[in-house]
Length: 433
Image (tube, rainbow, N blue to C red):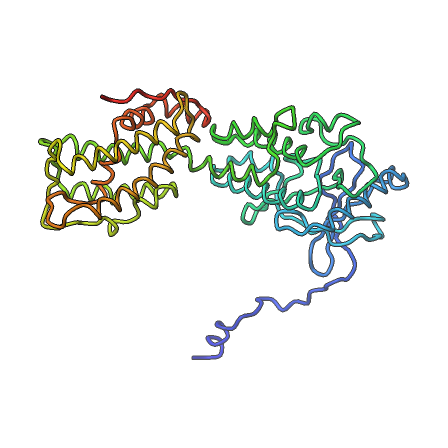
């Protein structure tokens, strides 16, 4: 191996040209800025890195109000340290711009510009969650942004990460200057436009709802947007953390009725609709094992069905589930299970119920199923032809009242209504007798 071959495996730079690293700002370049605003933004290089310098336009540079605004912005922004908030480095007097705030440079575009690239739903959800994380952080510091809007949200080219910028109109509990109404009219909460109301974090939540309207999210997010943008702030969410919890819950909850309906349908049609109430045990077991993969969409289902290996065979010699005679001890066990679930159904499902009611019922349903499962293990004789499997337990827990419930939830009209409005109220179905 010659020396050139050896050198090809050594790390280094292709060019050894000398790089001049200056400790003063140079290579100034103007950044896009509003003609009507008072701020001046420049991009400049120092120590081999790009920075943003934010100062005042010449016509505002000597006015006390705008000098104090700049000082207040630095004071607030310098106290924040979060990956989704632009980092404020220092306050300096620069030879070109004068008194200014020095910030990190973000290689990205505004949210407005980014949305024009038609990002997919997964990317938009990432942006929503990062916005909420940043809001929750600065609200925990008693900071209100007061001017959240797509133009003040940058999305990085590398990774599509959120960076909230421009705390020029922000306020805190502990500042006692420049408390007058401020913001951008299209995104300002009603109370921001009044001079005698103390603003709190719910003003930012209103603006966040307006931003969501621009993002063209799935229809299931409409109730979140509506609650964020309530005119009465007492009807809005109280925190960004609460919105995040609701947003993540919506992603899972919309699937729940369809997963449950699939579980009930597989067992009902494979088990009950077979001649003489018999079914091929291997098919039932495989169907439940396959359904377990789908069931992982919602964590509520995981305690009942996880993997194929968790399906328990009482006796592998029996390949068919035998018919259960009326009045037999097996039938009595199932009747008792049905009675317990019927009682739960009536306790948790009102005449007109929502998916929240249904979710509570299903939690109770699965807790009861565990108890029935344990009871069956205790009571079934070892030599009984009653094959104890998870499918048997699920059969026991599909009473006359919950079969029509499964049919209601799987109906196309119900599915369409739930996609449109997750708080849609359904009429409780009558039991089958």
